[in-house]
Length: 188
Image 1 (tube, rainbow, N blue to C red):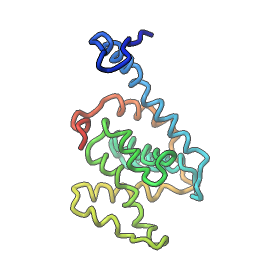
Image 2: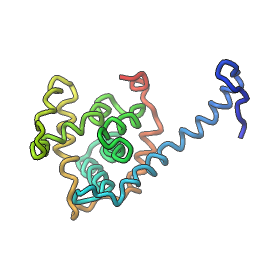
Image 3: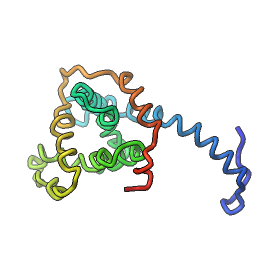
Image 4: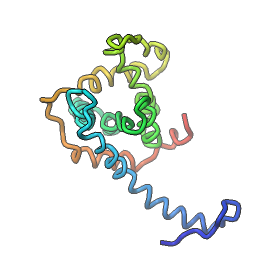
């Protein structure tokens, strides 16, 4: 593989950036597989929950798929907790950052905030304010995120539920991550 020849950005050339551009295209094509590989790290880690974190993601995605949600939404459901391994205290923010170039603003907002919204069902058991999500009542995505947590995320802990296998969702991840949205690339 050809490599750029500069030792500093200041000395880089157009030819260097053409080489880097070609390498980037190849690397970008592998992103969906790297994301799936990272998602698999959730397997076996129950964290005290009734199912492991991967199964929770599969159940969430399966429920969304079977309810007729669009492909982007199903991928968001599948990957919503992918940040658990590296961003334990704010996993939604990491999931949102990974998917930002590929999803709508509504689904990006959902990923960033779902952790607070899901707390409605259990924060009070931990001595926290279950209504913490209400600080976002004025957001146009409040109901969208609330719905996700109520219908899919919060219901996806059933050890007897038959979720679709990860392989079922891989083509969806590949399709969604193959087409960046220009509106989200600008950083809303």
